[in-house]
Length: 534
Image (cartoon, rainbow, N blue to C red; front, top):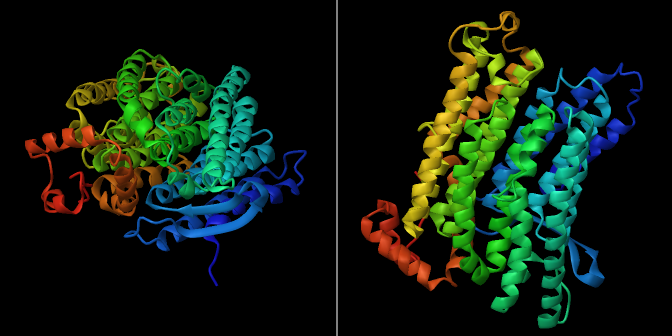
């Protein structure tokens, strides 16, 4: 009997949240029990995601472990979930970061612990559901369900301006979601017009022959929703407020997973559903991505608040992901998916450690620190590792994704690489400058002389992040191989509609940028664009 691992992966946190509802905690005496129960459920979910990975055939581009049940048959709506190499890694990332987010709140969240834990588990279920859904209606349900727990996490447990940040987050995301819903209903109607029945089946909708003008409008509806979620410049203004006001656990999940829903949406839905429109709009989106890379880096350089600095760095780094997707070749898209994972680990780690400093000093101002490496050497070492991973030091996770993205962008149009390269340099400037001001030099404030170093629950969250950053940098093939077939299939679908771009990439190939493996496979694929898998 086949075990429905995909359904278990999102139903388990829901069951955990329901269980917590029956734990009485009006006086707060059971806070410890609730924390341990929530952590146990989240670790169990992570174990399920690893079981999914173990059951996954990395050589197949098909969706695997598929589960399908009729849900609303009259409108062709099914409970339809499946996983390929792209969604697999994002589901594992979600399972990995949720226990770390819970550990980050172990001592900092001391009120309404039961409600906080319930919202974290419901949020995890909705995020996993987004990555598993192969029915567009089901996808939209999970997409909107995710907003509710995140809204309360920011609005109840955030900082001084938490209500403003929570409402801004909700309004921005809902505005994009409504546009996407209209386009989803339009796709179902087009399927009915072509085949006589409504369907929200993603794989069936892939096969629709949609007129170019219709593609353009539908693509814009999806693209705006995903651009807000990324967030892509100039739709980014909600993000710094949400990050700064959110509790540490909220920031870790927001940066680590929620923002990836936007880039995942481009890869899974917007680009392959509307390939002609994607080809038309990709250069403009890439320009916005490059602007976001440079703009985010420049604004990050002048931030006095560590958390806001990391928030703007997130805008910059996710611009790389969008650029890789717009390149529409295997190196670019594979690099984009890899960078989603790397960004989740490194930026989640940055928010985690900034939260640790904030809990100790009740301030995030860079000017309030200095010389911390003498006081908290272990925390300083962990922060340095995560910082170097974030700026893309070779041997750590950030380098692989950025390298593949820039290689893919170069094969498409080298001009984009110039702006992206400037973003890499600026990233090193503002991150290392922040580290220098916070940790180097002498202790300038007496309050910092007695700060405790890493505590046991902090060790258990920092060590996994540092370890994964190192593993991703040294053994990238572990993560690249599962995604390669799925990425190749998406790119082949896109490049069937973009003859001019394929010719351009064939010309760029004259610069001998292909690897030996790619050159051996030129005859196997019409476009001559291949993944790089060490």
